[in-house]
Image: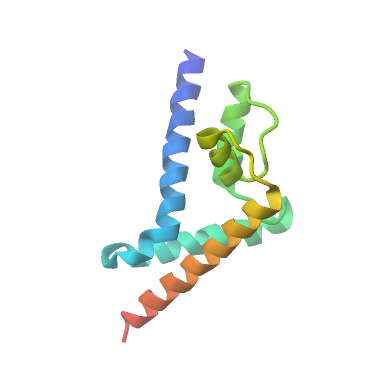
Length: 124
């Protein structure tokens, strides 16, 4: 029974975390989700930077929670990056840490700039 609950939580995290990543990247494009997208991006950057002061730069509490479930399910040697983890799960290829971190930060910054732009522009 416990395994079934852990698997259910595992699938929830796969779905939720992946949808959240996509929402962070593209949610600014839709007028109805722009404000929520900006809040979501700011929470993401706060997790990476502010919580990162204690846990290490780029810390994501969702990754931490999901990895705790995965470890209980017997997964080991999990990469520090959830993006790298997803890429490996989907393609079988483990990209380099520097590449993943650079692309993740770069795309997140671009999404934040876009979100700030459309949110500020819609106020005028």
